[in-house]
Image (cartoon, rainbow, N blue to C red):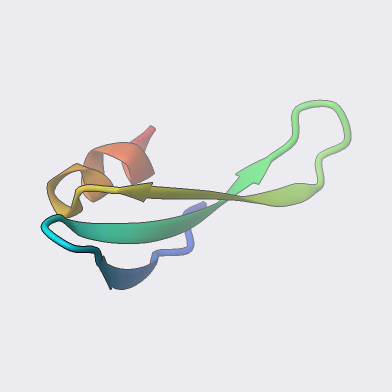
Length: 49
């Protein structure tokens, strides 16, 4: 299950995106949030993993 929250972040010369997704823990079954800041073109690949 992915929670697609995408915020555009701009630094001096690069445009970055912060993506957040929910990941289910195999041990406890609880969901945790994983955040990553990346190039906007890589967001869909990262969410599909």
